[in-house]
Image 1 (cartoon, helix red, strand yellow):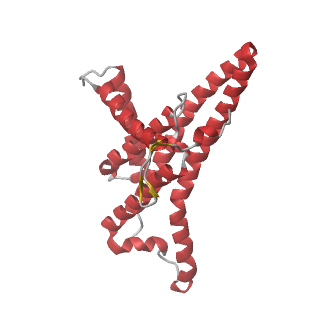
Image 2: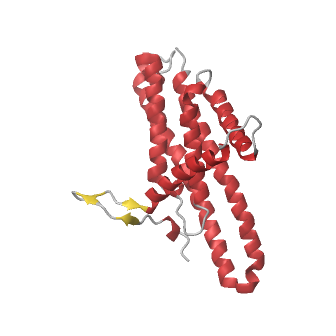
Image 3: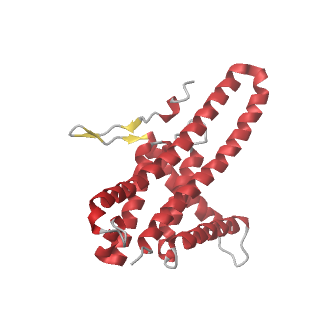
Length: 240
């Protein structure tokens, strides 16, 4: 009944190398399930492809256009090259949020390590994109044009800290939303269980909360995707 018990990472296949824990955990399992489920569901919904799309194909196409429009607005004219990455990030985070709502499942998006790794990967990709397109001029990100050289020792550390803080803020926003929502659901579910027949009304409230959490799962995945796209856009469209 402990509402924090659901966030415990447990090894499924223990594996250690020279004292380093490389065990396959419940968190890793649901990361794999999220990727596989996302690919399978999208594939199933668009097969067979028709000139006049059915409901499943129409939903997938609408979702793709929605994410593509977001990428276009945040990345700019070169957005098409980055749609596969942006769309994959959205599907992975959304499926992780959604699968975590099932009983006895595990919400890997409530863990700092995997989400921090996703955020750090997005930041590194944006840095590589910036260096690829702007060469060494990209490092002017840390000393914007027009800033006097005399105050560079003050400005550069601030800009570096601001840059490094991006994955941290991106991670904490998603993780805290998932943790708070799941703790609330666990507390309400425990209250329903202990109330017996009297818990019928709280049970209805729990069902409403689950629907609300499904909306939050989509919204948080979308916000994560927007911020990832913004980082790419900043790297591509920095001022010369």
